Amino acid sequence: MTEYWQEELETINRKDLEKLQLTRLWQTIERAAKSPFYQKVFAERNISVDTVRTLEDLQKLPFTTKDDLRKSYPYGMAAIPLKECVRLHSSSGTTGNPTVVLHSAKDLSEWANQVARCMYMVGIRDTDIFQNTSGYGMFTGGLGFQYGAERLGCLTIPAAAGNSKRQIKFIVDFGTTCLHIIPSYAVRLAEVMYAEGIDPRKDTKLHTFCIGAEPHSEEQRQRIEQMIGVKAYNCFGMSEMNGPGVAFECKEQNGLHIWEDYTIVEIIHPETLEPVPEGEVGELVLTTLNREAMPLIRYRTRDLTCILPGECRCGRTHKRIARFKGRSDDMIILKGVNIFPIQVEEVLMQFKELGSDYLITMETIDNNDEMLIEVELGDFSTDDYSRLQNLTKTITRHLKDELLITPRLKLVSKGSLPVQEGKAVRVRELRIKN
Ligand code: ADP
Ligand code: ZN
Image (cartoon, rainbow, N blue to C red; front, side, top):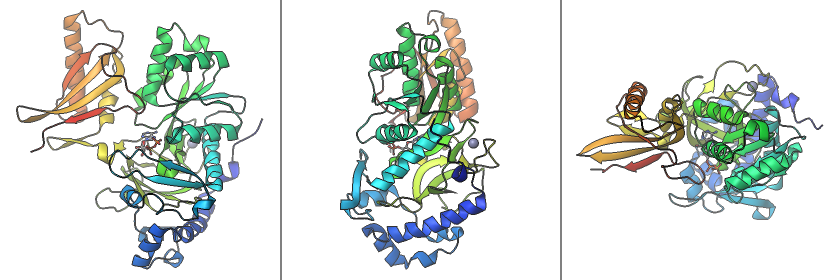
């Protein structure tokens, strides 16, 4: 059995890790200086490798934003000749120009290593049969997990997204033991299994899920684990940082280790842009340390999280970040109150009577901005009107306690909300702006 436990790097002492980071940061600055984008930024601000003497000096370097990537479309961030690049991933670009991420062969190999390391960490081995339910194409969850799982030595099934009955047939016939799956889709797949008369505990060999790519609550994770009888581990990635494998939960399921030999992690206040203390929520900022084709310095991810203080019981020394609270651009402001969709999910998922699909609609009624939450019922009879009313009242009270505003809550029958393809859209914004 191949071991993919890179003990020396994963349990490296902090002092040696920081030394390694500084050396790699210098290399990153030197490489970045060759890209048209950083060449200009460095020249304007008189930045060179000499600007950074210690890791703290990283703060002297400017941030890089998604907008910078868009403006550099398509090749303005390339730090090596295109001839030496072997892959390009591009985001959909629903708002403005798409972004492009380039990879050298070594970049791809490092990425596979990162994903393999994550998978090994949660107990996946070369004896496992791994099915990837991510879209292949530009979505990095496809190829990212494919190469990671192959590097680990799993028998890998590139099932790709959708077609639940076919997914289930593969799971049963091929004896799939592990899945990579978006959390909202995991619940759907479980429901289809039940509907098909398949008991995942008895009729499948599933034991481990890697769930990520969209925000989800701890309650949602527990639901997935209970519905299918597996362990589900939170995995975080983003295309700008390659894709999956940036940070991943270990078996402790208490925060996601972020691989600090690959990235320098900072958490900043999204408005003052100053670093926040450990344990405080802010915006995640990442610097790549190994990338050749497209180094990124202090990339503002817009994702909100915090560094969890203390050491992890698993023995890994790389810092842990908390489950994501959301993205700074996901935040809803209603009557001056800041609300994250995940807070709504956390409340809803506590009620066993409810299913897992919900939709938040922000709307204007009689000049008033309001929040409507529609949530599907689980196995709950809608005939008993007074029970339904009581349930609605109780949930509304819990929502008010959490959100500090009172939303309108509508319990709807199972299957009545629109079925979503890919990452779940939880919020509709229909408010009339004055
Ligand atoms: P992908 O190609 O995987 O969809 P994107 O770059 O489009 O990657 O999306 C990345 C974003 O998805 C992240 O910035 C984050 O907001 C969200 N995301 C990814 N993984 C998680 C996770 N485990 N928990 C919460 N949000 C996540
Ligand atoms: Zn750990």
